[in-house]
Image 1 (tube, rainbow, N blue to C red):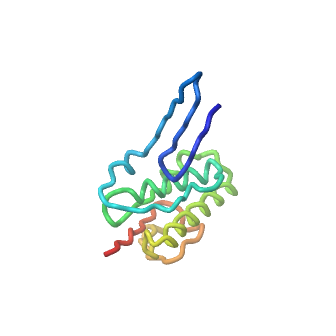
Image 2: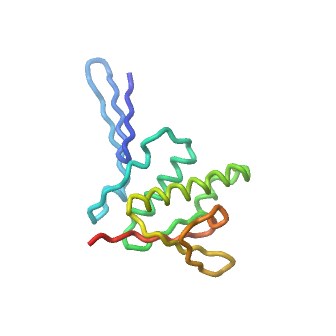
Image 3: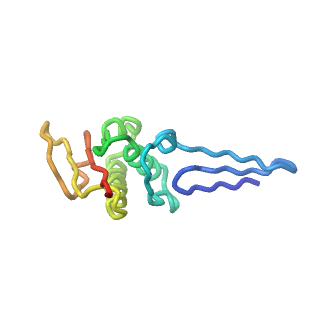
Amino acid sequence: MKYRSLITIPIINIRKIDQHWETEIFIADNLYNYWLPYIIPDIFNSKLSKHEFDVRFKILESFLTQGIRKKLDINKFFSNYSKLSNSNKTKVKKYFINGLEKFQRHGLIENNFKILAHDVWLEKQNLIESDIKNRIYFYEKIKM
């Protein structure tokens, strides 16, 4: 028998082996060592495809870095998915937009982004699929 729970982070695996229970707890290093108090929405609360999970984890990983300005390196992310079809790349870009919007709705990030387009940095409030390339900067909302 194996039970697996996924509640934001950590991931907990519990297995019964003979008369004993074995528990494994996985926690992201950046989450564990984050030096400010935070409340993260449950962005892993539903059944997600592999790509949806990877995108949400990448956004979370970026969010947990120190400093107000957060960086998403989209090119680096897509280098791990070089065999994706164009339609699947479009889906993944939508996952990035939806994930960032979820952080906005929870008041964790500001409603503005900086994107690199044709070697020029642009400020945007709403992202579209064509914005999801190169690098995106977003900003943590500081609550006083």
